[in-house]
Length: 428
Image (tube, rainbow, N blue to C red; front, side, top):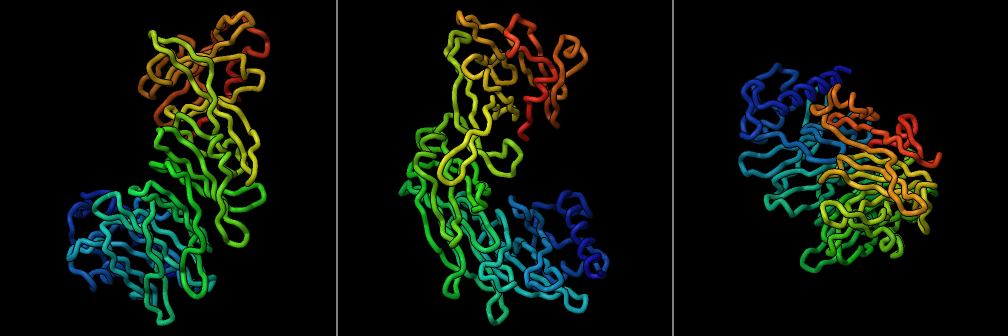
């Protein structure tokens, strides 16, 4: 209990220190030995100071562990180790040190010196199910584009050693395996590899090819199929400047497979919609882009897209819902089935912050239904409310408002504040 309290105190102090360069004179952009603290709080620092005279603590930039000092139960006992990244001022590369508590004293359990200049992310998994976790690190280098994944573990001699290294664009770490996604820019090929434990070593178990015209990865997310198989949803940008989705599946025998080509073709779209859980069932849904009828604005032809959101079961897709989905403004409005083919949407400004929904009459007349307008928190005021713009949602940055045009409409196309609130959802 005493050690746990000390560790929590240390984490709190480092959070304050590294969030402000004015704390006790610590400059986060300069390699300096941290300021004097009391004996209990200096334990971890003193261990690092015993191996280097100049350093700066380093934060992983993404992922679930974004602190310079992370508490993790690596050895599988009843206590956690301290995992610390720091930039060594003597060689300007990042080192990793693992500390364990022995008789209430922090002691080096393992140390590893990299050739990297930063840490993108860190994860922990137990690839061989021996109760001792491996440390999965995404290293960054000065070039900014080059990234390497490295898996560190403890061998039979208890020292920390590198078990696997390779290049990557993104990776997803599960407890028993890791999926590494990479793109060869010179050969214009992309692939995904499943890394796990086999024949007493950590290695690539199998590799599948990805779309051969990928230029970038918009989003890589882990999910689950209806039959509980684990899946990786990859939203990709293509050479054509279009976007598409591929799904990788981890089979029960720990083998990686790829979704059918028909999924890639079906999901090709002009905008960077990403997979997300639309209906709250904790499974990711795949966007398929559709378009409303073309219209003319400022003498230019335009169209607005809407999205059909599909659940994927590993072999086929099933429609979940249809919605106007604004990427820029981060909201969606579900479209009732009877609206499809009978309404359209038009922009009323140069952005999507103001759009108007219109009913298409049998004689092809456009009859106003309602408008949605997004104001910044600073813009919205009582005068705007008095003009008839009713608030339907707010975020930290924006106020989302609704204006009913009160036109003569068939009953199923009439909408009021209650109905629009039911159909409206924020994406962030």
